[in-house]
Length: 127
Image: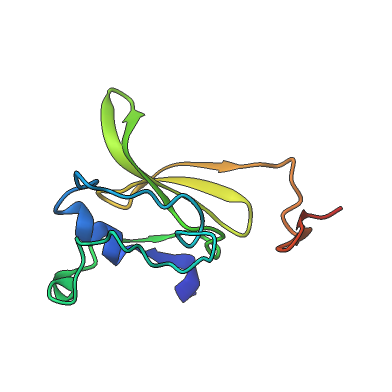
């Protein structure tokens, strides 16, 4: 159950200051670098001195376990507005578009062409 709730306290906490600081660094691959260290040497927004100020702003039920790292885009056109959006996939094959300000699910997509039960993490889709 805990894994099916996406708690983005770090991301949501940073959203209150700014979405992308002037010196933002991209995470080009899962885990930041080819070694998947998860460590960004250019990170200066979060420090030992300010991390205690992070607060959870919202939670969203994904309906299943998350199957990827969420993707944040700061300007996505939704109707006539541009909003910050998070995109998250689940193990059941659903992709969710989530308003990063509120946690509201704006849209969902399920690819019925894929058999999401036939998947090998080392090789990709099987069958």
